Length: 395
Image 1 (cartoon, rainbow, N blue to C red):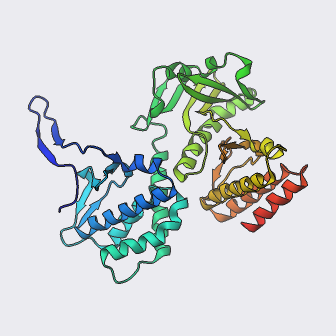
Image 2: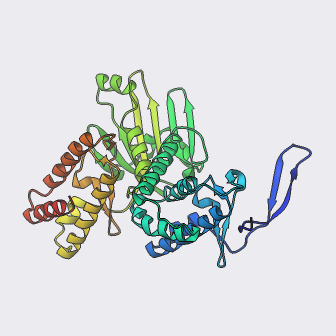
Image 3: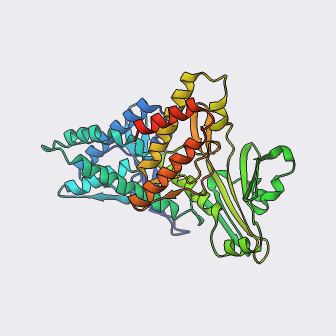
């Protein structure tokens, strides 16, 4: 159809193996859309989306629908944007129906963080002009389609969390389960996954010691890690854990859920569960270790100017708004569960986080989260008043 793609040099079958082979010409001096998106600032991301919307309109004008819509299937050069991977392209000989075209456009938006949905209306108008449509599609309906596509993508991702695939390395043996994000799959990680306790060699590593969990820092090659062990408090507690998945699983799943939504949390690395005895299921959640300060201490630091505290408070309320948009509640909103890292707030301690199926449950737990967060500042009336006022303002 004349769309830009890598030129096909050969298509055939290997006699010895029977493998089907395509050989494509390499496109030099290029970058994947995925890499370009991750490297770009907000203005750059807006420009990339505009280019991609224009390209999709061109696809649809020519009866082409890319069913496998993700940023890795587009390549950028200085001169042009290329479409890759024709395996899941559907061709409409008599033109692509408008409903299918909008579903495909919503699939594109489903790949990006919800905070960019505010761009959807203007980019939909851009797409409509490129298609020469006389009427503008309904924006609310289009936003619903985006949310449906994003939810579908989330469920697909969560469904991969405990199996061997391109994203994860899953190892199961008698009494032992480990799942590792594949990007961290290096030989040195094997010992940590087999026995996470072996990485705790000195008390200087200790980050938190409690009855329910112990957290320490560790290092594998050049990767700094936080290892959280969920302790078994006794026979009855161990028996209960043997019949359930436990909080390490929840932390692992919630970290990935937040990353899909673009809500800041340390990168999840691995989850391990080891059956040490009949009723001794010890579980671990492992994330990257980030260099930050607990919000509780950051806001109590007199060397931090009040104007900086006001700005950070607005960012934290913005973090709450991101949770609200996905009907997520944290479940333990202590100020020590928010880290200030390079001027931005990050959520940690995710084992009590829930995504609520209905508004009633969500609103009740949301209120508890906010009440718990405000209790952090009861000894500082000025901070209490600032956060209370911001919550009311953004309500």
